[in-house]
Image (tube, rainbow over all chains, first blue to last red; front, side, top):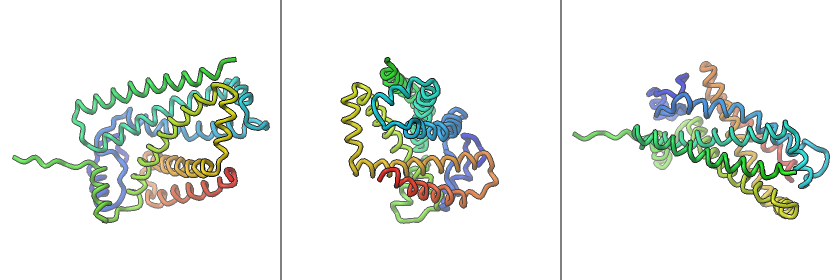
Length: 138
Length: 128
């Protein structure tokens, strides 16, 4: 159970008897592990900060002007941009892991899948940062 | 020679469930983690799309915000809170299990799902 992104057949036995299935049977690698668990831990805090800042950051009612002015704060920008990028890393690593759990990919398929997700993740991150920068205009 | 093809963990979970053979609670949490993860990923895309619309102009912002006052969408937001809490607390459980292997993982699974249900019930007054 402590194997990080490892290949542990005992997990499969436990799954078969209806118990604990968590570790990925196929090797997700140290980056796959970090991309899920470390970013997941960071996201817990960032999401909490995001919700508190958006809904309780100001005493005024929600408005266009209030949202734009709240985004002038460097801390808010840091939280929102960090949330965006780390959520994308977490999301794409998770989708990759779901597909790897299907165990239909050979070695080359694994590499292609990872490359595809990195490229797609980069494209979506650029889209997200573009949206983010669009509402930073004065 | 016939090479026996080993089935993946998702296929094994699905066939077992479809055949009506019960799995343990944690196996269902394992499935829930994947399902909620995909739902949250879809929400993230929708959320970014909404942001790209509402920051076009003040009129668009007000129009979208008015739409979000509908009770059905409010209910959907409440469901989303539950989905995110299930994913977050179950994920926290997995992080703890990876860091401290000696923990009682079965009990922790019940705590995580129970806490997500209770916390989302506590958030009802925020939406209605």
